[in-house]
Length: 251
Image (tube, rainbow, N blue to C red):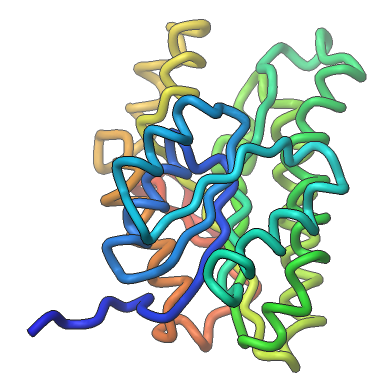
């Protein structure tokens, strides 16, 4: 007899789900019984993940930076699985440069792929989430909370996401919609590219992590997302959860 997973009968949308933390979350959700529509602009990788994970997932190749795609993404999840319970806003692109070299273009890239899509998707998903008493999982960054150099545009967008998450947590609490933020450190392709570009940051980054390692996208980050998406987290909202090996302690 197979035991139902913690997310059995739940449906999730995960942005940036073809690689990195997004893919780790997709895999963790599938193992817990969820139906997952994952969104990415990398068609080749998305098709490969869909083939790997099978009938529980649907891949949608779409650019979340285009506002009109928000409603299309939500509708695609409903069409594929009949409902939407969980929205995971994971995708985000940015360029890491020193503060004085940050331009409007850097800010536009970070806000256009991180903040605005999260905002649009939250608005588009709200009717479904209200009906299902669902949850939103957004992403912040510990590097921003500690003021890490070169993170100006990234940090501005991430903190804006945390800001709207707290507002939505309060406004949507009467609808029993939970809105929380994960701040992760994980061994992803993006982190490795950043460490290759700024090799001097590798050892200081690891030195600041008491558990002395980067997290695993599925085992460490995905499992926390599973918890926040599950009924076990129904009394948690408006919170920032540090999943960073102890690097940042919120007060």
